Each structure stands twice: as C-alpha cells, then as structure tokens.
Length: 324
Ligand code: UD1
Image (cartoon, rainbow, N blue to C red; front, side, top):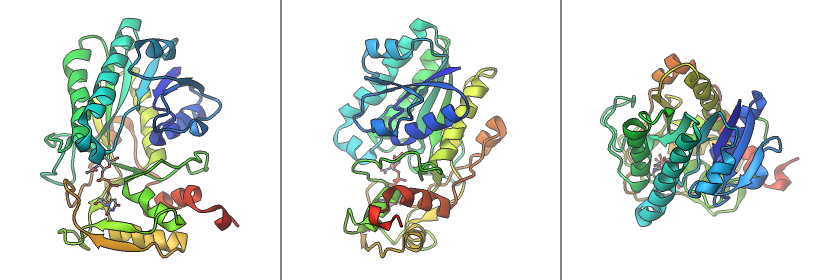
C-alpha cells in the first residue's frame, strides 16, 4: 500500500513516516518545509517539496496513492490569535484543496490530524469524544471546520476518514532517528529541553494557583511514537470500516512541576524556572479518555510514561559535550 503523508517532515509527521516504513508501507511525503526539516524524512520515503495549497503539487504527490495521512498544518494556538488568516489559508483552504483533488482522482481514504483544541474549556474530565466542541482559538476552529466539512461534504463525495484528536504530543523516536528539533517551540516539553541545554535561560511557569494538585497546569502528554502507531492502525481500519473520530491521549495527567522535577532528574541540569501569570486560554487540566481508540483500533499508549517522554527528548536536545 502506498501512503501520502502531508507534513511528513514535521515533528509528528516524521515519526509517522518512520512507523509506516518500519511496517512495510511505501511512503511519499509532501511538505513545503515551512516548519519541518528535510533531514528528518527517512531516506526510504519519496520526498516532494510542495504545498497542499497547490492543486498541481497535490496531483503529483497523489500519483498511485491508496490513502492519505494529512498532517500539514500550523499548530501554534497563540500565533493563530494574532494571525488567523494564516491558519485559515493553510489549515482550511489547503486541506479542502487536497480533499477535492483526492475526490477527483478517486482516492478515498483520509486520516486527519485533529486536536484536543476542538474541545475548548473542559466541561468534564476525562474528555471523551462526546464532550461538546467549542474551540477557544482560531487554530482549534480550523481543525473543527475540517471535521465538519468531512462529515457534511466529503462523506457524500466518497471520502472515508479517520479523525484523530491528539492531546499533547511529546517525546522523540525511541531509536533516535529523528534528529532535528523543532524551530522556536512554544510547547512546554521542548521549552524545558531548551532551558536544560542552555539555548534559553529559563522557563516561565504559566501560573501556580490553579486548582490542581500542585497549582500548575495538568496535561495529557502522549509519545509521538504512540501517536504514529495509531495512524497505521487507522489506515488499516479504514480498509474495511466506516469513518470515525477518536481521541489519542495517555489518559494520565502530569503537572508542569512534575515535568520539571523529572526533567531535572533525567538531564541532571538545574533548569531555572520562574512563576509568571497564567497564559490566556489555558484550562487548569486536560486529560483524555482514549477508550474509544482502544476498543475500535486496539490502540494503547505504550511509551508515554514521563521518563520515556523526557529521556527520548533529551537524547535529541542534549548538547554534544554531554554525549559521553
Ligand atoms: C497547546 C495549544 C493547543 C495545541 C497544543 C499542541 C494553547 C492554549 N494550546 O496546548 O491548542 O493543540 O499546544 O501544539 O496554546 N506551560 C508553561 N510554560 C511554558 C509552556 C507551557 O508553564 O513555557 C504550561 C501551560 O500553561 C500548560 C502546559 O504547560 O499548562 C502545557 O502547555 P503547552 O505545551 O503549550 O500545551 P497546551 O497549551 O496544552
């Protein structure tokens, strides 16, 4: 089976490409390298430099493809508030161009990278797929818009989709094959790693007065290799089942303080931290229920304990002199 991975040079995409290749799939990557790194795309995959916004690029990339895993998107929630057009153009217009090209070429299997950002403020925990959707930033809105279009428009055009709502992706390939870290990250784990390796001075803890066990924000961190495996299961499932939507999380919550403590232990670095004000739009606690992914796909998180998450990241982020 030949799979197109859009955004396959990105942080999560490069891990999905590895997992597909390891399991014997033929892979083609379409990426504009606006965020990703070509070096992170395994040599066994064909690489096309291009954009999902270009019908011509999509046509070239889709040649001979059986299914599409669509991961090309911008994902910085904060930036999406400042520049919503950038998010609408790439995440919505680009995805619709890709989907319409697929329909015209008769390619019908589609795995979509969605996000827990579609839920917005949690009304109950853990969050299952029946939780109301109400995104609180344009990034989440772009993901929800595509979820709606898949249901409303593309099912009737023959598209069979898997919508995967990721919680907080973290960690790096267990075998260290993805080497280039993300550029200018905003998410907690890469920021902690940069503070550990000295490329930034410290981390800001966004609030320590939440109603959580130690006052800092709690999130559900899921290892990228676990996420990657779910994509392969989703492609497989779509061969003989209808469209579906599932959460992908570890179902365990860790606080910012717990992460910092574990990171200090693993890296043996002080990682200076400063308590600052809460970040706008941050709920105190977000934890998934991934029961549906378990029962439907037979998937479960296997590498998402805090030690594995942080040690696989430190393998990539630690300075060269620490490699003794
Ligand atoms: C963020 C996005 C979400 C997106 C996800 C993946 C927001 C509001 N949400 O999730 O839409 O799907 O990334 O890209 O931006 N924290 C600090 N200091 C930091 C960074 C984070 O204390 O420098 C805290 C946050 O307050 C939060 C936790 O760490 O409690 C995790 O933050 P982050 O990694 O940014 O992820 P989310 O905000 O959960």
